[in-house]
Length: 85
Image (cartoon, rainbow, N blue to C red; front, top):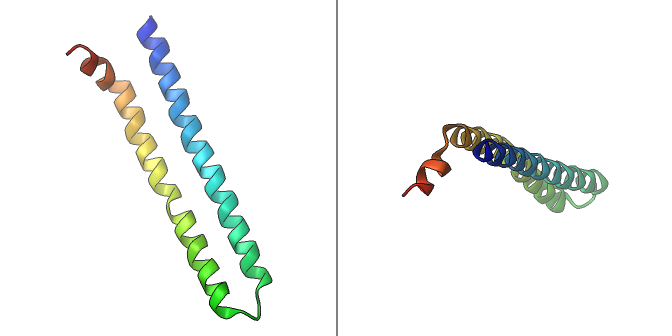
C-alpha cells in the first residue's frame, strides 16, 4: 500500500510540475507578445521579442512529451526496482 501512495504522489508531482511550467511559459510568451504589439517604431526590437516569444512557447510541447515518459516510468515502477539494488 505505501508503494501505491508513493506512486500517486509522484504522479501528482509530475502533473503539477508540467502544469506550472506551461503556465509560466504561457504567461511569459503573452507578455513578450504584448510588448511586441506596443513596439511599432522599433522593428528590430519587435523582431527580437517575436523570436523570444516563439522560443518560449516552443519548449512547451517537449515538457508534455517528458511528462508522458515520466508517467510511464512511474507506472512501470522503475524507481521501485532500482531501490531493490
